[in-house]
Length: 390
Ligand SMILES: Cc1ncc(COP(=O)(O)O)c(C=O)c1O
Image (cartoon, rainbow, N blue to C red; front, side, top):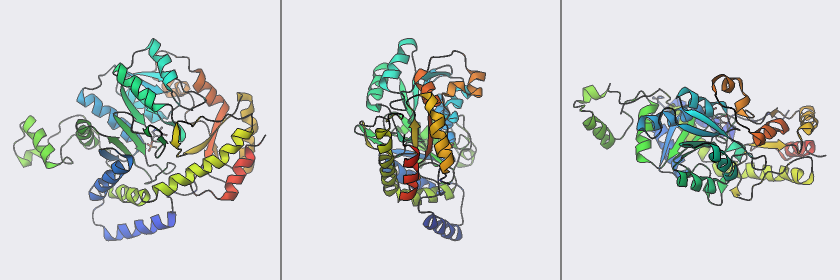
């Protein structure tokens, strides 16, 4: 059996030993210095000014949109575009906050929204925001998408939960918009068991994210920022400030275990991602050699941080044949994320208008994926390659 992910952590033995030592020597486990230090290190790795750590990627998505509402940068009812090939908790907050969700089609050549599919959508709908998903380690032409959004005054957000470490020639995935979200759930590139992050360069957004992450209070801001908030709202005593709640919020805090594990795993991120790229490139040879399978376009990508091995058959009828091969070889497989998410029960229940999403429908019907664990052995890689031969 080759499971989607073989281990909870990269270099698992070292991670678990380190965790045991951390637990033995620590006396505080609620959010504190380890979380703050991981936020700093992750923001530095990503090349962003700020990182805000969460208990999941879904929480990061939720808090990002709440913070934009709190700031008034997005208003209830705003038309928010999203990639039709995405994950449930990318789209669900759009309904929860009363935005108008507008799906944008994904190209089967890129697995993602491209400047072309976004341009097509913008012909019939104006958007105030585009919450794009970078799917399974791949991306569209994010530089062109960023320029289009800038020209049209569209706030660009990236759900980079599946593409940590992917770099385009024009910059790192996750650095093209106002903010980006990451997931550290077990199956993702960097695991803290559960966890998530938001990166941004905006001071204002950063402060609001910190307020919205925990109760709406100012306790996790630095003293200068706390003073500004207290002055603005006439909070004069330290005593009163402890239970002053400035704006709408949740409790989406991580624990010190999340922060510790994050730093521990971040030490190995380059090796982890190099392995992922090598594995994808070895397996990609089978796609190139087999005209029953599509080869995903990646010339715009300088570093491919593969999350999984996406397989898209040339015709939907071929999928059964290749799925059966994987099942027979004991290789665990999954549908292409949530498929065309507009066909999911929750979406149909709450959505109004229907859109033609032919590219995403094709990806859903002709595609599936298996894992690309960074510690796959050469023999396991051969098994996967064997499943992809005509
Ligand atoms: C694109 C995308 N966004 C958000 C999430 C949510 O992340 P989490 O599972 O950490 O809540 C996922 C999870 O797989 C995802 O794939």
